[in-house]
Amino acid sequence: MKSLHKMIVLCTAIGAIMHFAYLSYSSRYIHTGGEPDQEMIEPSMEGPRGAVPATAPQSWILPKDYPQIALDGGIKGETKFRVTVTPFGEVDECTITKKSGYPELDKRVCSAVATRAKFYPALDDSDRPTEGSYSSTVIWTLD
View 1 (tube, one colour):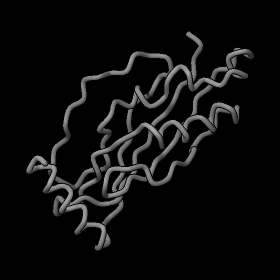
View 2 (cartoon, rainbow, N blue to C red; view 1 turned 90 degrees about the horizontal axis):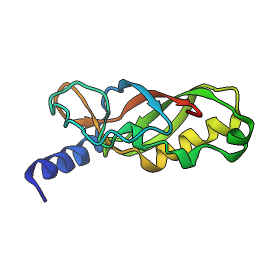
View 3 (cartoon, rainbow, N blue to C red; view 1 turned 120 degrees about the horizontal axis):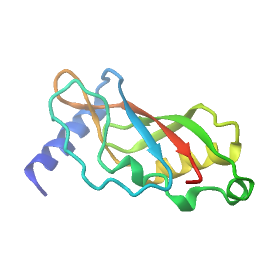
View 4 (cartoon, rainbow, N blue to C red; view 1 turned 180 degrees about the horizontal axis):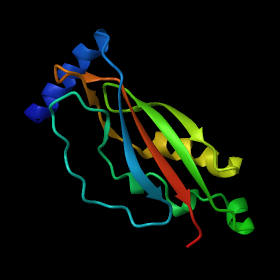
């Protein structure tokens, strides 16, 4: 195990016992159907900062996630969401913050993000992993 990884695991274990501030981060749009952006930059390990994606957000929602009923009906939309990220960098909870108007699209967002998204945890003022959040938007297009 790499020493940085060991440090994060140790800090996370300590952080799980203590109560820390809730930090958040927002992203740019995630477009469905686009090629995943494979170039990810490791974030600063100095806090405070919100949770930061460890996997490309474009890889969280795939073309196969587009509901068939929406494809058949030519339905497009925009779904905004927020996830709570644990001190271990895992999605704990996903909430739709702005519905697209089509429940079929909105249901797919949290399911896919909870399954595919991985994060670098938020860091508190002492650079310890803590619970945080991440917000973004999925634009469902038929391009």
